[in-house]
Amino acid sequence: MTIFRLIPTDTVDPCWQVSTHMGPVVVRTESEHNARDLAAFAFKVEKKSCTLEELLTESPWSQEEVVACVVAIDPIYRLAGPEEILSPQLARTRVSLCQRRQTVEENVS
Image (cartoon, rainbow, N blue to C red; front, top):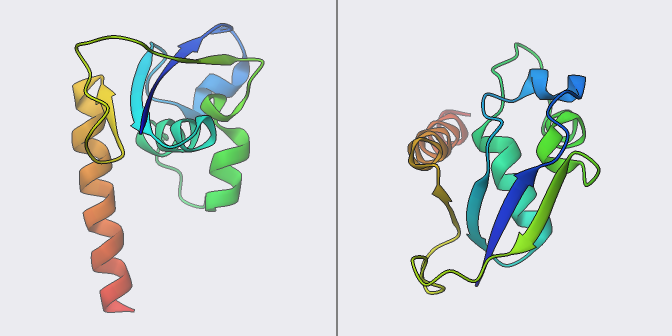
């Protein structure tokens, strides 16, 4: 795994209306693409009708011109472990809850 730091560079862009967070994010994952997708999912504003494709194209976290992504070399974060958002902590809880909700919805269908 690699540790990525996502850093907002243009916080006045209107695309931030679909995100609940506008600060830096640290993600442990396999690729920059996955890091961006995890942030988009974790910080999405709840909309009544939003497909996964819409979320990933509208989210500022998916846009290179709005959010920079760099490999983070920081001993505070371990490379070993599951794919997850490491900071901010609130996002970790939200992603976990969303994943559980999706699993329940799949089992009901």
